[in-house]
Amino acid sequence: MEQSKSTYQRPRGSKLWSPGSPSKVHWDDFETVLAIAETGSLSGAARQLKVNHATVFRRIGDIEKRMGVKLFERSRRGYRPTQSGEEMASAALRIEEEVMSAARRVAGRDLKPAGAVWITTTDSLLAGLMSPLLAEFRRQYPDITLDIAVSHQLFNLTKREADVAIRPTNNPPENLVGRRVVDLGMAVYGARSLVGDEPVFETMEALRQLPWVGPGAHLTDLPMFDWMIDQNLEDQCHYRVDSVSGILAGARAGIGVAALPCYLASQKDDLVQLTDPVPELTVGLWVLMHPDLRDVARIRCLLDFMTETIRPQADWLAGRPL
View (tube, rainbow, N blue to C red):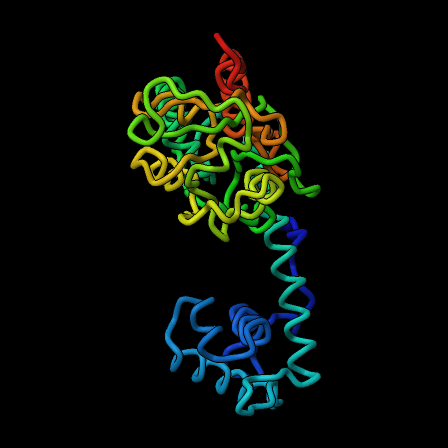
């Protein structure tokens, strides 16, 4: 009986490499060349590839020997790709994009709510809102494993650095899809030790006389950063932190007053709310993902669960009286 022919048989001699051939090329050769081209140095490529400097040096020498071409010009300023190096690095980018796209498409065919979901979110959201919700999600979907990465930077969801991003933003990336679940309100809070139990600050001018805690350089994308500049609070801000949880800790310590998310600060008895929620500081809470993953069962379950459990808390999250 004649065997059926595979759809994926390659033409004779089309393999990327063949044993014993001096010009053979491995898949990971492209990764090495791309890392050197992107970083311009062996040490930078080593960090990106998570190997040591000597390994990258040995790899690129071996690749050039096997291929019989010079891929990089070496100088004191680093490694600059030759024309051959540029062609190989460009091919590596195309390979990487196709591999990531295929991985997302395969993951998108998942029909059962099981497996791992990689989530990236901020420290303040995880500590002040999401941890109890994710605990309940795990109880309802025990076959789904959650892997949480805390970061203020939006991971590259196209490269599968994360599956889902849950974070505050008013400008979600255009290449992602998702849902604006609720609005998060922010107001000015101060420690009782600094402002007293029943403080009266009827104007921003009065608040400007107090010391302030503000956002560090890694939080420039939050509305709080621009708002403090617009309110001429720079001269009163002598303590900056690059995380919202750190700003909260500074305010609770009495270092200064601070603009904080209402859901986070209202839970602290040692803080007093000094203003109503500030409209300019309102930010949307988004659940975001790559378009190829929106029909994955476990990710759809997470999106729906977050919507159903968070939206009933909309007033509290916006800072409105309950």
